[in-house]
Length: 537
Image (cartoon, rainbow, N blue to C red; front, side, top):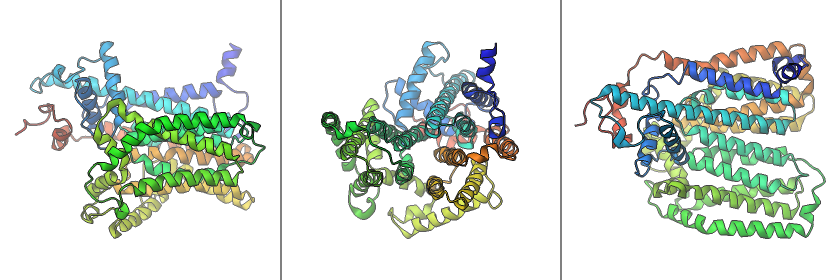
């Protein structure tokens, strides 16, 4: 019994430590249990049409693929989400938990009871998948953040803040492509931070290569993640460390490692080049930025190379290790792009290779004036981004623009921590936290082009949490400050209330599903109609 008690309840309960009621494992279990309870109380039991965008979109794609048809949803393009959803439905069907796996097994809409039962089963199965993905993201985030900051109590508190943030709360109960995209990129970024803080490790190039793979997979699933990936690259040099480099990368063994990595990268580059050439040759609805096909894609590659070269120069990374890291990144990106072959469709390739043209089209749907400009780089885009800056600033006040985003409180605390750190002379700490927050604000500004919905915050909420945890762990005296416990309780209370606001709001929505009939025929072409929609004309 004493062992179990020590596993659940740590002996130290002073200051910030008093906010952690369990040990490390116990805290993670409690967070996951709370996440599951929130999901069951508000989410799982929603009517199947309540979050039709994107629940019905993804559920239909899962059934469509299992029927032997090709994917016909390309908005994000959602490639990995569709693969995973179809496999998940197949598992549930084999276990007898859903009655229909293919289109032919779905009852006609005229039999509304049977039709609604089948779609309810499918959507709820998909929601369980979203919860499982959210839990996996939370656990991996917790493990990597603890490795980065080396303080399990602060890591546990930060994990709580992520798990009950507004963005994750919404994505944990809907079949959105954002969960996979944001989760993969965040995990990849944490791996890069750990690599930046581990100069003594011989395996740094492999860490960097794995991170490149995860970030590429995130972009493959939702190309909007490209903005986050591009924004975090300049942050990494702020987190480097000076240390005696490992002797491996200065020995003859390094040559063998470089040859092996070069061989892998070259082998992967051949099929990757075929995909890129296919994507660049695809016709687009508008000319590319600067009017040159492939130019901005080359600039993205240049950004990666410059970021890595800058890091190596600032922190005196051995040339062999730098070359190995670049080869590992090339291999990781190639492997991530080759995932498009898992459920191949040329439109997926075209979208992933030409992401700006695709995203501009969707931004134009939200802003007709932007669409009418006819070009990606225009004065209207600058005006829209300027308005986005003002909107993001107003949201941070919470008074000028209310928000259901609980991490705004963490942002306030992070800003206060940066001011305190600067006054104490910890200038580098301030630049590190400010770099993370600058990414948050920049990505949110771009997100305003699509309305900056609550679901989009899953891309930037993790960075806010990392910045707050980073400041707290380095301002160690705040952990035992006499106000630490009271402020922590207040922050957690506000965090919980705001985080649940979005899911609970949908429980009490009065609107019916009839409004979904305007777009459902386009996204579910092989369904005659849904039971709540009139017959097609």
